[in-house]
Length: 191
Ligand code: IMP
View 1 (cartoon, rainbow, N blue to C red):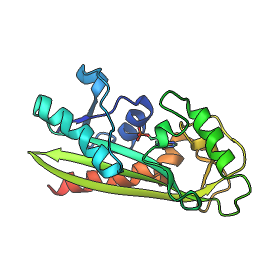
View 2: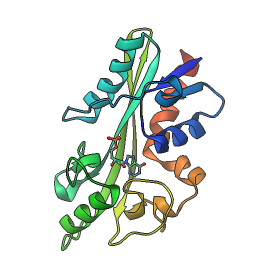
View 3: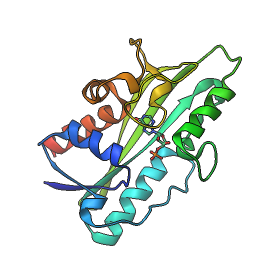
């Protein structure tokens, strides 16, 4: 089965293709020839994930899935959450977002955090959602060069290294995105 993955983020494409392996054929938007930006205008990961999959489904009538991910920090009332990509402003880098998060956490003892991914699958005109969570904590300064986004400051529960210090295969064995995608794969296998 061919499935369009409605994202323009190459890091997500590479992670998801590794998790799905050869179980299903995943086609990125770039490979599909769609280069427009899809907006993420809503206040929840669930609505934004649906926005992305439904834009592609309505436009092309294909089976597809998308995902939206946020880093949720309870001591900051769930920030950056759904705003994770644009935390430091409409035009900002991952490094700007990390700087802002570290400055907001200055002097706060509770540094617990979680990544939460919501996958939205549209299959034969019906939507299904799958959630994956990775719990951990935010450290005080960056460590590691791998991964992307907030990975250099996130240490997952049970580990001493950040996601950015892990090989892709190690991150993929415990990450929020992998957990949500594995649920999607199980669902598709039983469909
Ligand atoms: P979005 O899902 O594309 O809206 O991404 C939300 C934000 O979270 C972006 O700034 C990403 O860089 C960041 N993000 C998403 N997934 C991960 C991850 O696995 N590790 C670190 N940062 C991530």
